[in-house]
Amino acid sequence: MRDGRTVALLAGAGVALLAIGVVLGSGPLRAALLGDVGDEIDTLQAQIEVEAAARADAEAAAQAAVAYVDGAAPALLADRLAGAAVLIVTVPGADGDLAAGVANRIVQAGGQVAGEVALTDEWAATETTTFREALAEQLAPTVIGEAEGDVEALLAHAFVQGSTGGAAPSAADPAEVAAIGTDRGEVLWSLLVQAGLADGAAAQRADAVVMIGGSDAGTLGVLADAFAQYDAPVILAGSPGQTAPYAGSLDVATVAGDEWTMGSVTVAAVISESLFGAVPHYGPGEVPGILSASAVPTGTAG
Image (cartoon, rainbow, N blue to C red; front, side):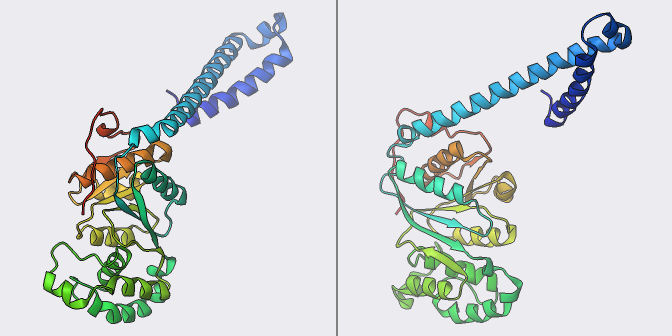
């Protein structure tokens, strides 16, 4: 199959040669002046027509596939996430349409979008460095399981705990959790929002977390690593470049893609798989096996 550049070159050459052909017509003058070039014109014209037909067929097939998946999604996903509370997290540069599509699929699968939260541009801005350091010092006594000193990690854990209703890391000391109190999640989230570093509606609980990849790989990595230390499974969805650092990860599932009608269905299926303890990884166009299974039990974590 030719790439776009080849097709463009063929088209350009074909237009020029076809123009000559039109001027000269198809009689003896054309044959005398063009000779074998006339045959090349005919060949190029045929190739252009074949390429155009192939592109049209491919586009029609792709549109039909997208329409089919969109229409079949409720049946494919039915009750896969029954009762599950899912938190959606976006970072600067994240695809808003992808986040909205994932939210829709969660509902189609019988789950609930427990919260939709976001990091703001100020989270990693150079001009807020000193402010973030001071804020981290203020938040440290309320953040569970993260040693002081690493500002980025501490703020990431504050974000996780604030956005999930006060969840604690899997390895946290229960006594430490009990000592801090039950309202720390609300307190942390309120402070992060007031500081302009976070936005959105936090969850009261999260059985699973879907992160939508963005433009800042460093910020995305710190936050994903923080979420991975908690009980709720983590799914990272985004472009192949955004998900590549976690390909094969044992802690963070990934869905890489560039077309999100099918991709959002895959994300919902991966949430279901993750709730059963799997950490799957899917590339563009890859479809989870459970979408074709006739009977798969569903449930939630927590």
